[in-house]
View (tube, each protein chain N blue to C red):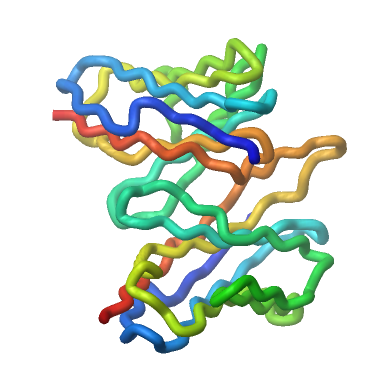
Length: 111
Length: 119
């Protein structure tokens, strides 16, 4: 079946640095991918919709200049957390293809 | 606006007990999809089921069963003869109606129910 690959699985970075997370659709072209964020012991909240070849659509309250999304090909979307701060520490997970197949997630810790 | 309510924050049972996880949803769409996911401690989301709003048939898959009742806007999930490996957070989710020709679902999640199955 369809597989969504997400990398890295976990990352620790220093405050003020940027981190890039990749979401790949391995055997299916994905014109749309979704990025979600999950804080500890909370639910998943949609951050943005990534559209191949065009700008991402961000949900209300999500800073587009802080969470840069690039969807340059039909199989790859990237989320870059710029100038990360401890409050950005969270679990980031993408979905692709049909929107309900998820990657394995990335646990970001900012120290 | 869409909303999913999972009123049970945590449930603890003893192995072999049956357990039902509740899910109530709100939507103005006439066409929508409902989902259940399992999230073990490792974090990944394990897809369990997708149900079309027009299909109110209950479904059984092994020890899992789902009861979809449109009249009460509920989509409850029952695990029969629970096992320790069932311990996880379970999320119910609702999709918005797909746009014409679209095939991607943007999901609204409930807050999740932490199920602990004790030996």
